[in-house]
Image 1: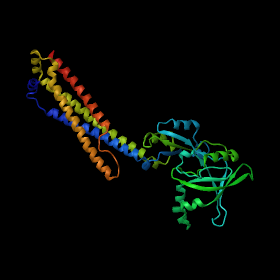
Image 2: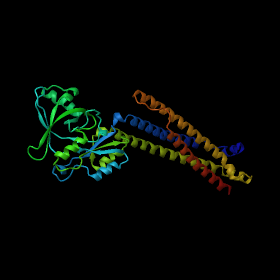
Image 3: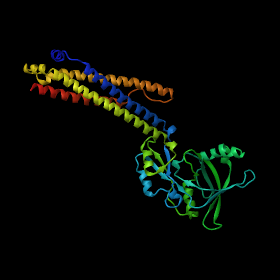
Image 4: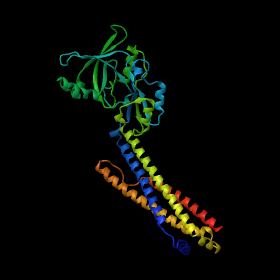
Length: 398
């Protein structure tokens, strides 16, 4: 083998192979570092989804002029709800149920200023509600209606309306202690009943006035006379709130939600776009480097054509003659694999240090997919070049 190597490689320039080596190494590092960066950031988004994007997403249809003029409906049909349930990103889906009768709330007494206002009620299954209270239950015998209001409503009053009107701000505890009356109006004059109402919690998840689902079903059956409309809102639990297909589905169907709650999905879309671009550039670099490898080895074989023929005439099989080229190729591929993994590991360590400064927890070790990608590409490039070497030497030996 050493004798063959000295004969075949004598007077050959290594410049072409060095250029191919460096080009392939650069492409591998760019590709592997891009995959490592994507996997790390995806892990951060998944682990911190409670900070970036809640798992519960409330969606509704966009309001258009057709709905204003009564030419279109704004609710979700049963088929549309089933379509949402069938989406891969949807783990659980529930529709909002609303009151089918007029509702009013009012106060009476010396300690609380008198007021009266029209209300609306909605209900969803208890497992979708972020307020847990022992008072969240409806007992027709007791006659007290528990109510959950959005935290945003209280914030609007305390930090917007109250200061502008010279009114006192109200803490949660005080507001929960206020007893008020709720009037449920059936069809016909005088067909109404008054019940006690009590605020039992404040929701940060749902921007609606919620009552227990069993109460609303009971009240609709007793007082309801409005035309029953399709649900105007849907709440879903997403398996992966960072999934970009959530935004894509909402936009394609003309649905809407609070866009701030899909921040991590938008970040994931941008991240995948950037990583896809890096992968494309890396693939181009690796492809060009592969061609340089192939052409360099073919050039070296063609320059040694006379030596190869003489060796063949002396009894050397073309496979034996190909071994020095294959050995050199394998050494170069091994060097590219080792160096690319080492450089990617060092870059991952730098990223981990930066992440610690930003209070993000990621691992400095390489993901398993990095090793698989590196070995798979090296194997592919090696097999292609080995096949080309064997074919070229076989032709010369004929």
